Image 1 (cartoon, rainbow, N blue to C red):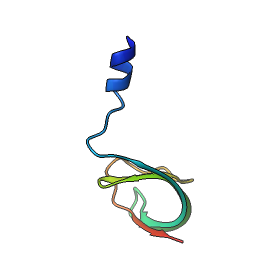
Image 2 (image 1 turned 45 degrees about the horizontal axis):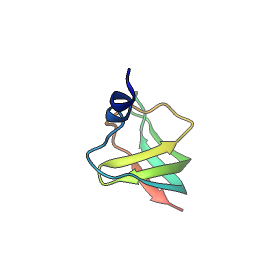
Image 3 (image 1 turned 120 degrees about the vertical axis):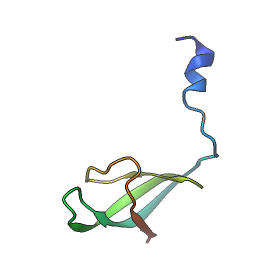
Image 4 (image 1 turned 90 degrees about the horizontal axis):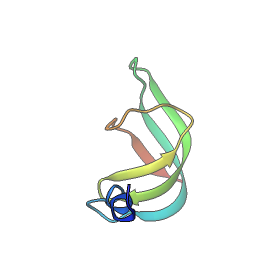
Length: 68
């Protein structure tokens, strides 16, 4: 892969803002059980967030985030 293609693969349609916030994350597990967990938001954009969480979540899974 050449240098230009490496940069092309990480382009986003919206700008991401780097941050480091603690958050309470709520959602439903694969088997439908509700959960609540503390996580760290690493970056945000209008379309979503990148967060560190000790639970597997699916791409596109709907979560509720509350910055604390």
